Image (cartoon, rainbow, N blue to C red; front, side, top):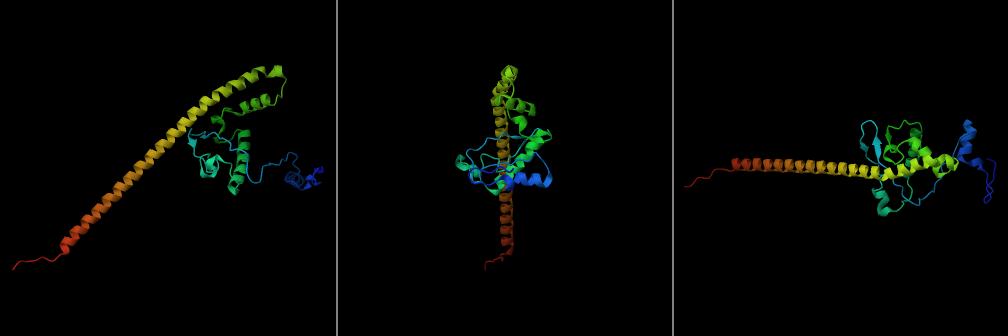
Length: 205
């Protein structure tokens, strides 16, 4: 933490991780670094699955690739909501790490579980000797093949759910409009009857 930057000459004394270490004595302190203004690409998130009932959970605007935040598929300028979502995602990752996340994206990804992620990292970074990774490489390659089929099925389910919700909303709107029309017709009828009763009777001489 006393190492000085070659450009500015500043040390790491003022960094957040050093401050947390000094205040708490925790050794494993890290800094989550990102650009202050925008990013280079928009990540594709797999759907959130409620592990209790098996339903796909709705996305918040900040995690929905189709929301107006990401219009024209351009990376947006970062907002408070986006920065807060980064912190939220870190906490969710911790829940995934201890396998206690009730609403998870893990089952809808090609990883499926934490063990698959470990294998993927081992293969990508060649953490074991090549001979020891032969079988693991095959497993990872097989999982990647299954990913497309699973993703296609999930997207179909989401599209079907959205279509059903749209139909329900349309039916509810039509029912409301019919009820309003019937109420208006009833009021007009009552007004005509009232007007007829209120007119004086004329007699011919």
